[in-house]
Image (cartoon, rainbow, N blue to C red; front, side):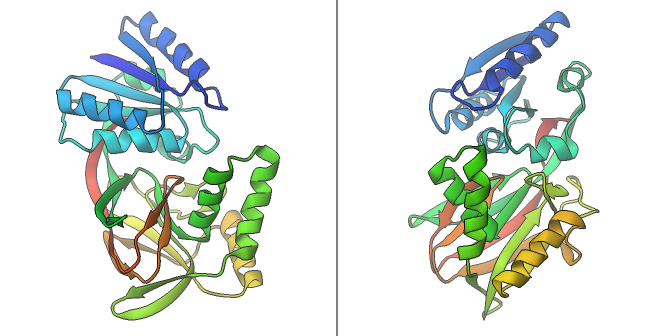
Amino acid sequence: MEVVIIYNPVSTGDSEKNALELADKLRAAKIAVKVRKTTHPGHGEEIAARYAKSGKDIVLVSSSGDGGYHEVVNGALSYNSKNLIVGVLASGNANDHSSAIGSDSLSKAIINKKFHHIDTIKVTAKVDGKAWIRYAHSYVGIGVTATAARRLTEDRPNVITEKWIVIKSLLSFRYVKIKENNRVKRYSSMLFGNVDTMSKVIKLSDNSSVKDGKFEMSNIRFRSKFRLFIYLITAATVGFKHTYSLSRYECKTLTVLPIQLDGESYLIDSNCEVVIESVKRNLHCVL
């Protein structure tokens, strides 16, 4: 078994420092380790895809937040590899996957080979007129959360302005309009989660599981700004009370639809069929 740890050298967090510390711990346990830096957006996904295609016995660890790990997961799942195992070393602003189901000590989990197969959430749609498939390791968001995530990505704020952008997104957002079962519906927010907490604040569910072949869906129908604000405050304190466990959800977009997967933001085409489904235990990872 060989361990490869990747990190982002321009990360604002402790990506490189954490990667080197983990490497030292694993080498002390006589495990072969390589440490690699990423050089451009999407590089983590490219590295994971190459290892998945090679068929080698590799544990690939992303020293990152949820976004960097999202790249690695999608690269790993681009090939049907039985030998590539992935993991995340929490080194970002939001570390939902690690916080929800990660090990207290990633080094010990690797040394003791605590490897598990867990579910992912698969999204199938169209982007720029082409078929588009992505996997989420933790959650999928549509509506106000996706809009805020996109603005955070575009503006790249500091810690102070980050909160203001989120508040401004909340105040300016109206709704997304989609078609469900041939009926037009308006939503302020739609969340589909494998884990119980999103962005360290929003409590998605008390009974989520990453091994049951289902995700928890929490929807907020369109309402006034004040009622939406109160609803989100409630979600951040006591959690969503109206959740549904589903293995599949389908809708059709009526306009271009912002969507986020694990904090990474995308734009789905208008007049497009969208399928969100749980893929049972297709990701081999360290926990």
